[in-house]
Length: 261
Image (cartoon, rainbow, N blue to C red; front, side):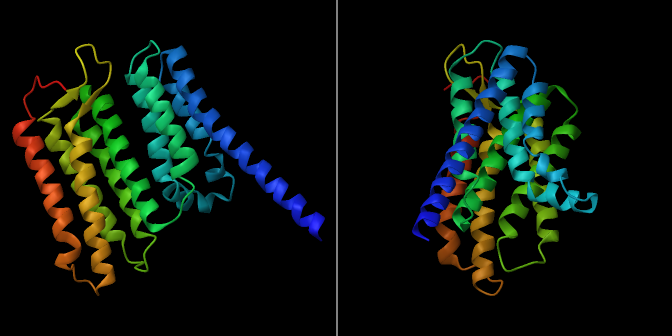
């Protein structure tokens, strides 16, 4: 019996090592394919292929699986698009984005605690709107707004499905609409921050703003669930002041069109 337990532990440890290696390989290869090819297509295709389990069941379960994996798909595709947008020559942004994607795959994504699901949703909101803003800047704002709706819907669903409340469809829809509207507004007020004079990747205001507001939404909704639908001031005042302060400073003091960091 002891030998059997030791064998099982050894197999589990080996499986964990292989799983970590494959995830890191996914992050590195998706970046290298994008840089070498000069196209976002191969990186995005690799991310989609890594989610083959979504369709490895009967078709009636595809929609359910897609919604369950929407946050992971958003993060993976966003990193591929951001790597593409960072330039065709390998640079520090490519390395940082690859490292961040590896951390997502190995450390953040596998966790299921409440705080980790919120962090996962925040990742999807920030990096999803980050990539959407940069890639869709030359398109009609309807395109970016539609993609932001999907991001907001998926992120809010990811948080709310962990709660005891099962009637959250309206809330996820409203969250998606609000993020879509913010995308529309920020499209017509496009402020970006770049680091250095020759920066190959800039950070728009939209992902910062929606990330802050989504954090506030998660705090408020959790407070309402814990207190029979009522949001307690003790739970929301500090996060609200923190969020409003950052938005105020960003909008009124760091919104010059030519602003550089």
